[in-house]
Every structure is written in structure tokens, then in C-alpha cells.
View 1 (cartoon, rainbow, N blue to C red):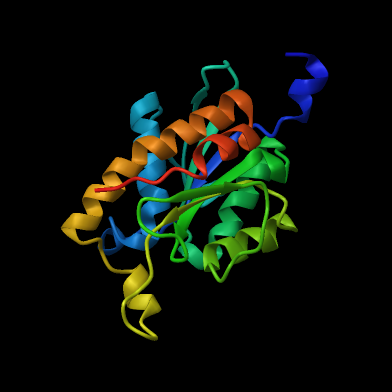
View 2: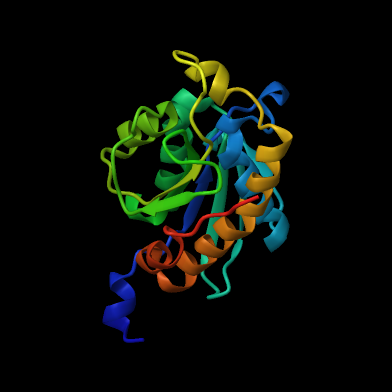
Length: 204
């Protein structure tokens, strides 16, 4: 690959998983971002370390391309996630396009994921905060489907609830697909990962 071609690729350097920090939120739909970066650090052997100046826990290591990579779980609560992300990007002098954010999406069914190079918050409070603190929408994101609520006006209890046993089976099978998409983005760029994984569906 030519140097000019490689420079044009969007390769994440900071992978952010969104969630809420208290134990009562563990494994809820809204914390799927936390779960995914936890699984990545476990697979890659990167230890988490709490960092107060980042208002979060951070892990770091090398990708298979031998590039430095960071993973972050903001501990600010969802609607202030941008404070933590901005602290890390400022400290390591990263551009917004170096950031890949992983979060839950009710508009996607369980078993689907969608990676994009940019876009609006779509009503997600964590993304609203990150867009505000990074000064725009121009950063990659990976949305993981958590399905819609079956009841009208029950959004909060839905996203803060846990998956049913049947849903959890599908979610657990989705994690390797998400990991493969992220690995591809690190090696070949976000656009390549989009083309390979956005159409895939995990079934029970």
C-alpha cells in the first residue's frame, strides 16, 4: 500500500465504549459499549487503569499493525461522556477522526451493527455530549442494535433494562462480529470495515 493511500484511510487510535459506571447498570442495554471494550481489552491483553484526569478508565497497547491504540470507558455518566473523550484527545493530541465510539442503538434490531464515518447523535445523550466536546460530528462510530421497546413511552426503562436470556444469546454472538469489524478498521480502515460488516446479521 502506498504511503499516500494509507494516509487517506481512517484508522482509529482511540476506541470509546459508552455506558454508565455504577454496578446497577452492568449488562444493561445502554451499557453495551462498556461490554464491548471490556471484551476487546480481554482479547488483546490490555489492562484497564483508572485515570482521574481523563475521568475514566483507559487501556493502551499496540494493534497488529504495531500502532499505538487506546481504549476508554468514561466514568462521567452517559450524558457527560464528551468531557472524558475530550480530555483524552487533548492529552494525546488526537484528531476527532481518530476516535471510534461504540454505543447502543434502539433503531437497530438485536444482532445488527452499523459502522459510520460521521453522523448525528440520533437522540443518544452520550453522543450528544461527545459531538459537543469534539466540536462536530466528524468521527467514526459503531452502533450496536438493542431493539426497540415493546411499550410506548418506555424508552428509559428499556435502555436501562437488561436483555432477556434469548436476547443475551444473540448479543453474545454479536461480540465476535463487532470485534472483527474493529480489527478490520484498525488494519484496513473504517470504510473497509463498513463494506464488510454493515450488512451482516447475527441470528439465534
